[in-house]
Image (cartoon, rainbow, N blue to C red):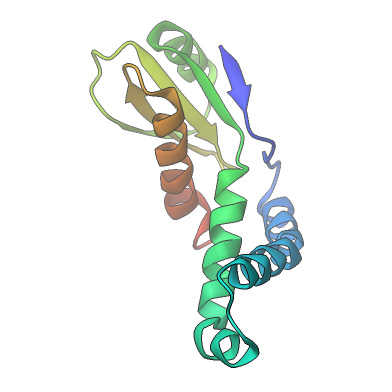
Amino acid sequence: MHTVGTFTFESAADAREQYDDVGPAAQTVVREVAKAMEFDREEYADRVSSEVIETARDALFASLLEVHVGTRETFDDWRESYDGEVSVAGHENVENVVWHVGPEGEAVAATFQNEEDAAVATLRRQAFGQLYRDLL
């Protein structure tokens, strides 16, 4: 088993604080991307809305969530010792699992066979939608 990402939270308040902290980085990313796309001031003002910045913040936050990657056996061992709810997407006969533990006694997991990077990215989106969107 190994872990990728950096964000893991002990509480909902910790998650909210980290989400707030990535706001300025999201604004910078959007501004620099717009600059690379050669938006002038008028086009930037027309096209870059608060929703665009919020989407960047959501994506940045989700992309940094800590994800555990392991075999089905490793996941099953962890799940036996975990005292919360776990939502699993995918087929039970697949060899590998990625999972993220949220701050409020819930976790999400997804099975995968070969494409670890794709599984991690998909799980992070699922984790954000299921565990964090309403929390933040």
